[in-house]
Amino acid sequence: MNASSSDFDLLEREIVDHLFVLQPGYAVGLGLHTYDGRSPDLTTAATERWEGTADRLLERLEAVDPGSLAPERAIDRLLLRLLLESPLFDLREAHELERNPISYVGMFSLTSYLVRDYAPPAERAASVEKVLLDAGAIFRTGRQRLRGPLPKAFVDLALAMGGQLPTHFAEAQTFATRAGLGARVGAARESAEASLREFLDWLRSDELPRATGNFALGPELYCRMLFVREGIEAPVEEIREAGLADLRRNEARLAEIAREAGRTEEELLLGLANDHPEAGEVLATARAFVDLTRHFVTAHDLVSIPEPAVCRVEETPPYSRAWTTASMNPPGPFDASTPEGIYYVTLVDPSWSPQQQEEWLRNLNGPMLRNITVHEVYPGHYLQFLHFRQRPAPLTRKVFLSPSFTEGWAHYCEQLAIEAGLDAGHREAELAQLHDALLRDCRLLSSIGLHTDGWPVERSTELFRRSAHLEQLPAEREALRGTFNPEYFCYTLGKLAILNARKRLLASKFRGSLRDFHDALLSHGAPPVGLLDRLLESGA
Image 1 (cartoon, one colour):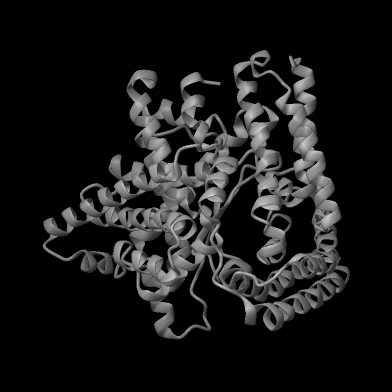
Image 2 (cartoon, helix red, strand yellow):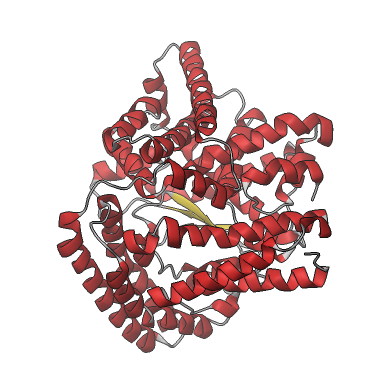
């Protein structure tokens, strides 16, 4: 079927609106605040209705002749297909709502309402109240839909995440009190926490004792996931070999540095930990690194920095402290209120013992914090989202967020900074970069091994101990993360896609200009990495 531009625009709007019926929180994160305060109906009847409408939209989309569309819109047609097929995969094939309690516990991030001044505080607090009032229905649905025995790793994480939610809800009430709605949000919080406790008690008493180690997707679903998330149709073996080759390159470079220094690799990596700021200096150090990395990007003409660019550095909120060392809260592509990014860094907890505080500071040492700043701020996530906001792109490009492109770009930037001479002449910067590169290589290999090759968690743990140079506890945590988050392959997968595109096109299409290549790359938003070559070569 030939489609006029206006007809395709209307279909695009229908598909995006339908996606947000199931994922209103995603819309809020993008800066679409007409979805504030909404929660999805996850009952079986509601999701089956959603699936039926998605099927009909896919049929209409399939009927559109891509040859009747402009090249850019023909690519958007495929992106729209993935936008629908990805949640359909979760519902029908991976059965997330029947086997993963994290699907319910993980829905309650209120951060967008608390930290961004896009509307008066009272309006945002009212949206928080609505979300909290919906918690009871969501947790009741979880108990109705989850069908055990559940994977133990999923139950364990749901219990850990759920245990942190009351702290997050308390933050929300504090915010609402300042907005004059403390009593209303407090009542909603009390109801939400009662429903949460009931849900967690049920998980702990009924599901945890009979939980199993059966977490793997299996080869067929794993390949399907790669397509619906990233448009990738390459064999898993090809991806494994690329990841293994990157691991070997990074291992060889680390060994070379060790030989030059006359020390072991472990001694070099442990030596990084000694160069750390004092507890009271971490935020000031991070702010200095934001200024340093921004200047570095400009001085080396690596990529354009859209203006205005404002990034503030704050302590990680209590809710996220348990699993976050540092993170970026960027402005959404539809958020017109501010370009400000918020760079969160987790500080030592005063309740920790002196030994625990010192261990945390050694983990957040100077070279590592600088590498993290490259990843999170310049030229990583924050700069990427400035480009995302700046380009007047079709609706689909503003909505599609590929994890492998987003994390791949930030991880690629760590290597780019070393190539461009960040802290040239001092090996500590490259050691920090290699440390994180080895970790991400192991994540990709662990994901494939755990979900397609029948690896036990112990084998993944040993990979992280041996090749990422982790101690036993962090190695176990990384291995367990792979059981419930197979997509932590995204860092290396995306980085390698960008490096391959650079190798092929930098000289022939971009006249050797890294800035032109990077600006072109970021002009496409955050597309699935399986389409990266097509986008860059066609300019669509």
